[in-house]
Image 1 (cartoon, rainbow, N blue to C red):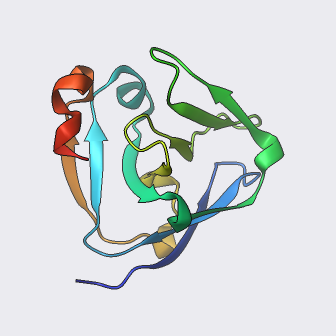
Image 2 (image 1 turned 120 degrees about the vertical axis):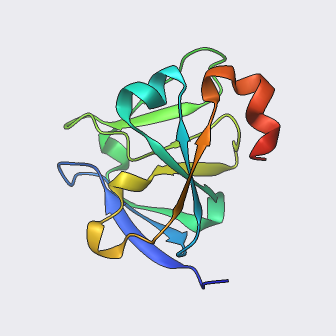
Length: 126
């Protein structure tokens, strides 16, 4: 199994920067729920200690919907959601794979996830 390393990323304008532990071969979920489908979010789910916000906490704004559990975090300036706290993993983060810096992105395996039917499918990724 490939060793994980810290990979950096951020929002479009650069106001929000973070780093996350990831490795080649990690699984990334392509979800079809309403918000992921509309934003093209691909989930790299990590534990809380595998994520560090480097800058821009003051530039993040939060959006909650449905159960109000997931904390969707967007840059106030450019509107990009580079990561959020998901309902499925409230002690971790879901990082948008496409917000990782291109020169440091791991080679990943993309798997579909039927988030439009979240309750029926969540056990498959926990």
